[in-house]
Image (cartoon, rainbow, N blue to C red):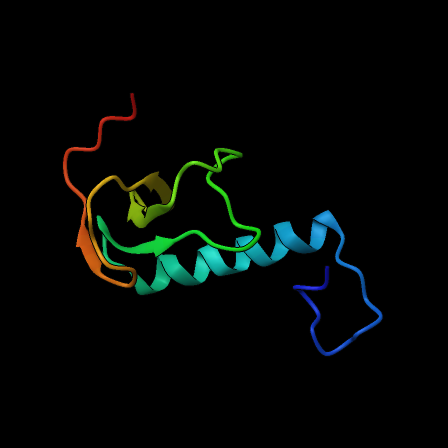
Length: 90
């Protein structure tokens, strides 16, 4: 697949391309989002939640200056902004 250089139809992505693109995008989100602010994202296509394909949607949010991704069990629409409180990592 070619996700990182769509203007070059002959290019085939390398793992380093995906990592670099992910890091750039995470940095961009960290500049946009305020602390504990996030958004609901539905997983589709090649996306999955840490190899758990049963997870349908996640919350992408900023915590302690880092972008974090957690499973979302609540019935919330994609694109909705949320404030994340009292996160229990267990």
